Amino acid sequence: MRRSGAVAEARGFGPGDHLCWVFDTHEDFRVRAVEFLAEGLDAGERCWYLGSSDVAALRTDLQELGPVDELVGCDALRLVPIEAGYGPDPAQTVRGWARAVEDALVAGHSGLRVVTDCTAVARSAELFHEFARYEMLIDGYYAAGAPLCGMCGFHRPQVGPQRLDELCSLHPSVNLAAAQPFRLHAANPDWALPGIPPALVAVAGEIDLSCVEGFARCLDRSGLFAGGGEMVLDAAELIFIDHRGLVVLDEFARARGGTVVLRDGPYQAGRIVEILELQQVQVEAGSSR
Amino acid sequence: MVVGDRMQHAVFLYDDPARFLAGVGRWVAEGLAADEAVVIVAGGAAHEAIRGSLGVDGDAVAFADMEVIGANPARVIGAVRRFVESGGGRRVRALGLPMWPGRTPAQQREVIAHEAAVNLAFADSPISFLCAYDTSALPAAVVTEARRVHPQVWTADGYADCPQYDMEGLLIGQHPPARPDPLTEPLGVIVDLAGLAVLRVSVAEIAEDAGLSAQRRDELVVAVNEVATNALAHTAHPAFVSRGLDRAEGSLVVEVATHGCIADPLVGRELRPSALGGRGLWIVNQLCDLVETRSGPWGSLTRLHIHLL
Image (cartoon, chains in turn blue, red):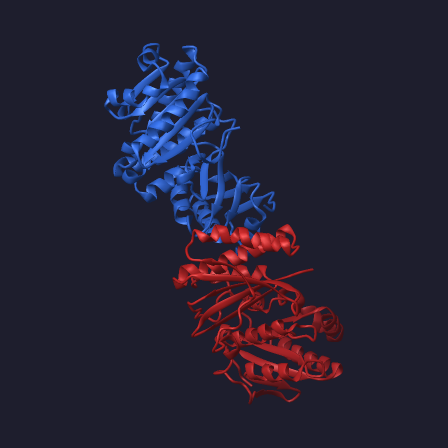
C-alpha cells in the first residue's frame, strides 16, 4: 500500500511511494535527500540524485551517504543534472523513467529510487504546466506498482505559493510544512502502461473555499478524462467537500462531456449533489466520516 | 376580479371546520373552472379532510405535505416555484396551511417571515395564494401577524384588500435594532478560510455529544460550513460561532454571527446560483430543521437548528 498524507521526515518510503518535499534552505533538502536515498541503498535499489547541473555540487550534497565515488563507480548511484532527467514531453519523460527502472532491474537492483530538486523546472513559466501534467502521469506509473520510489524537492522561495500548492496537491505524500487541504493523485494498481494518464485517480483530504480554486486548476492540469465518459475518482479518503468543490467537478465533467463518479465518497457529498441536482456528479456508496 | 398576471396573496381566517372546508371547496372550484393549476399544501389531518370534501375536484388537484416541505418554512418558496415551473404556463392557485397549533415559537416567527418573503418572491408571478389560519386554535398574536403579511383577505364574499397589511413593517422581525442575546457557549472565532476545517471538527464533536446520528452530524457540519464560509467570503469580518440547546424547539443550535450584513431577504429561499451565497444558503435550508436569520446595524446572525430526537 503506497503512502498518502503528510509526513514529518523522508524515511520509511518504499516502491510506489511519491513524496513531495518543500524546503526553505538547500540544507534542509540535502538532509532529507540523504535519509531518503540511504534507505534505498540499504534495500538494494539503484539511486539517482538529480539537481544542479554542477555534478560536483551533487556529490558534495551526498557525502554523508557513504563512499560516493565507489557507489557511483559500481552504478549503484548516479548524479544527474536536472536537464538530463526531464524533457519537454511529459509522456516521453515517463517512458524514460520506465526504461531506467527496467535497466536497474536488469542490473540486479531491486528497483530505482530517485531524488530530484525540481525547482528549476517548477519555477519556469514555460515548463510549469507540462511539469504539473508530468507529475500526474508519473504518479500513475508509481501507483501501478512500479519498483520506483521518488522524492520531488521544491524550493519554496523560488517556486511561489500558488504553484507550490498545486504541486503539493498532486503528490500522494507531502512534508508537513507544506501539507495541502486536499490531494489528487493516481490510485490504480492495475494500470501498467507508462506515459498515459492513470485510469483511476484518488481525491483525498478536504475541499472548501480555502482551496477550491487550486482544486480546479489541479483538475485542469491533470490532463485527466480527456476522453469523457464516466470518470471515476476514488474518494475513500475524501473527508469533506463543500458545494463549491462539487460544482467544480460538475463543470469539469460537463466540459468534457462526461460524468464524475466519487467512489466511496462521503455521505455529505451525496446530499449536496442531491440538493443542488448536479447532473454530472454521482456519489457512490456514500458513508459518514 | 381580474388579476391577470399579478400575484394574489390572501389570508383565509376561519374558526370552524365546516366553513373552512366549504370555503376551500369553492376556492378550488373557481380555480379549476379557470383552468388554473391547483396545489394544496397541508399537513396530515387537514390534507385528509380537504381531500375527502373535494370529491371529484380532488382528482384534478396536486397535494403536497406541508409538514414535509414546510417543516422549515424557508423551503416552501422553492417548492412552490418548482410547481409553478412544472405547470406549463397556467396560472397557479396554491392553498397553504403553514401555521398549525403545534408550531413552536421560533417556527411561528419563521412562518411569518416566509409569508412576508412570498410577497417579494412572487410579486410578478401569475399565482394566487390562499393561506388558511385557524383563529380558534392559534394564538391571537399569530393571527395579528398573519394579517400584516397578507395584502389580501379572502372570505365567503371573495377578495378584499387587507387593512392591516404592512409592507413597510413586514420584515421588522428580521431586523431587530439590537443584536439578539448570543448563545451561551462560544465555539470559536473564524478569522480566515483556514479556520473552516477546525470549525468543522468542532461542530462534528458537539453534534456527537448531543447524540445526533452520523448523517445528521454531517448535515449540520455542511450547514455551518456554508454559513461561516459566506460570512468570511462576503463580509470580510470574522465569524463568531456559538452553540446552545433550544429547549422550546427541542433542537441543537449553532449560531454564526458577523459584523457584516445580509441584504437579500430571499437568499436561500430559492436556488439562485447567481445570488451572492445563494447556493450555500439554499443547501442550509434543505438540511436544517429551522434557520433563523437576523440582521441590523449591529451585524447579522444565522441560527441553525437540528432537532434532537
